[in-house]
Amino acid sequence: MSGTTKTYKAISQSLLVAIPNPSKDAYEINIKIPEFTFLGVHEQPDFATMYLTFYPKDKIIELKALKQYVYQLRDIVVSYERLINVVYDHFIAVFEPERLRVVMNCNPRGGISSRLTIDSDWASRGGKEKYKDWMPGVDSWHKLD
Image 1 (cartoon, rainbow, N blue to C red):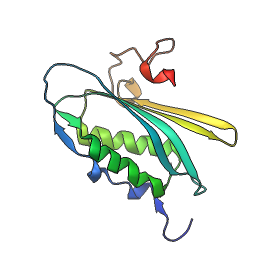
Image 2 (tube, helix red, strand yellow):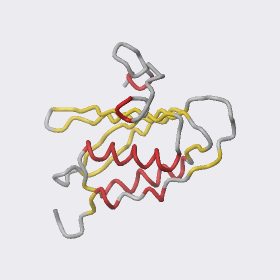
Image 3 (cartoon, one colour):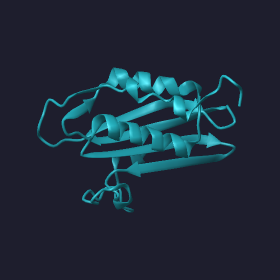
């Protein structure tokens, strides 16, 4: 890596802006980011579609700020696996949602594509496994692509 290369440590969660949730009722927010780009570990562009499933509590995602957060990744050198974990951690910290599911469908590179998923509902992530839509055999909106 070159001396001016930015790594995952340069990803700033301060670009994310939480705004007050206008409703106290339960609802789901689905966000699709079809132009999710970053630099892979060999400093070559990587492309993915990212899906966010978000059950808000007191805060929701300000979408203009989300764009700025995503744009900063275009010159960050990071692996798929680290990137999804950093994004997940930042969203949990800033928005404190009831539930957050992050899915990253990576475009093929060298003939191989990858799909990574993290769900705050999983017991391994501290969840209670009360939402069953992530379980095998259950269709969900982001599986359509």
